[in-house]
Length: 428
Image 1 (cartoon, one colour):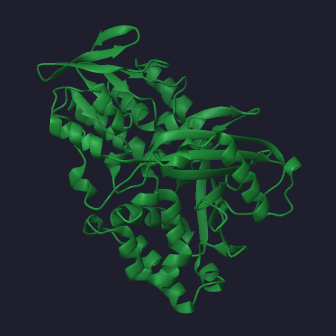
Image 2 (image 1 turned 90 degrees about the horizontal axis):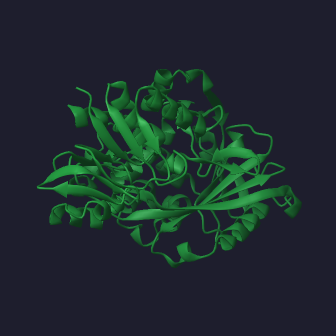
């Protein structure tokens, strides 16, 4: 029997939930506060170029993403590119990302290089992550790579992404990030990453069209203000247009919002949601007339740069101009997050010109900043047992976000896979 089900949020997870529900003969209604689908994958008009606000790439191991492309009939839009990594350290641009680059790296002893390489290799071979769940990440890494390699290759990543939370992160969560990049290689020395022709918007518009073609509905600029609950059971949702009855509601918005939307949750569940912390991001995107480097990803360790790295997107996806993303991660409560956009734009101009001294102001065609308060959950040791289950103790209510596929890092593929599974659970 077909069910009419409310889905909150039109990011990749919400769209995947609605896609599966609609394909299975149900009638999802997706409520989205933004004026477009996509969440953090949404595109914008960047001076004539439609492109994501925040960078995305795909690995050959992204099974759920690739299966979705097949289901939507757009697998022929997928492109794979051999990419490079680099490292900006001690005022020098160095190759990075393979054993030869590691051995040639200037500023690290041979013993430190061997320990770092061994740790990275074993991370790609590890299958069982659960023993790492309760371990603290920086201590775990230090024990493997030593103080020297940690200081040169890891410390600034933790400092400039997690700030005060840097010494309270799950080793399992960090391990999953190492493994994902490591398994994107098609041999020991060469890395292959992917992009969609047309960017993530190709996927988003195909998902939207498929949902609507199978009887679903997507309502943009329609935030849900409350999930109405009576006698421990979902009755429907409230929006600016009033109340609308639903027997089931699936929320895919960031978990910190759930406590506001469903204040009738039991106190212990509200407390669990309230304890979840998130990293915010100010992501600067620059359009340039010339290339900065030949690398897709560039790690940075420079006392003048408060970033762990930058992404030169057009070294993955060729475009007419050169696109560079420079993300500034920080807790949303950090004073830096309140600084004006111009402060971040000025930094990026300075950083790019330092890395490539041939760049001049005239090379900058356009530069913008986007902000997202809940960019990434912070996963402390033992995170698995503190995370509320998606099936909440109110009949007809489910809530999940990128936290729920821990220890995997947030990603389009993981959101799609989890969203489709969640949809099946909802109607099981």
